[in-house]
Length: 312
Image (tube, rainbow, N blue to C red):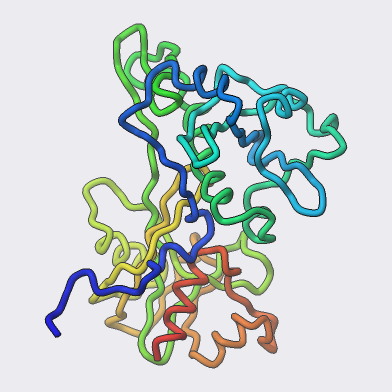
């Protein structure tokens, strides 16, 4: 059978990570400047309401992320800053920032941080993917209210996907920050590091931002050498993950080490070491005798490690 570039599993590896289940039709070519206003008048409109890194959920037997425009009014939404995420089968989907004091939330509404929603599986994959889109766009618009060319206040356009400067005419578009996250591995061992802000005992893959003018592969090589002193030969892509903290794209890769001796950059990491397969399995199962662990399943680091374990 001839080789094909498109021979792959039925479900791409990226579809297993958290925040990747977004099915909204973004309709990027049809975003008019009045699309938010029109969407809010649609009786089918559904809203994600956010504030300070938290999503407002209706609490009952399960958590419901979607609110109608009428239901959202108790949260004092800033409708002028609403963003049209796109269309679903049910109708338009929007994101809107809330201004209500957390101490004054209605009894049936809970404001829960995005990371906890992911780790605890509080909403379904499609809503979680929409949350990543909503959080990233609201964060970008909030931090880019002034023109980077002339400093004048800018206006939101195209439903939140463009900001226009009326003073100098410049247009600015939402950004996504590319981050490489990589598992350096041989058949028998993999390289894991520990940051000071990690939970006690947790080790994870190394990661770092892609710099201007740099390929993904060279960013993987550079970050691995800078943080651990390990040089890489072959680098292969595995999967990606939207990461709304605030608007990154995690690009997951595997790297093949050329040397074994670790020289940890202690300004970046608290520790970095090689782990064998059996020890990593214990860490994944939360059964390590020293209470060491790896990231939970929502994180792309978990899936990189699992893919390595599954391919002996």
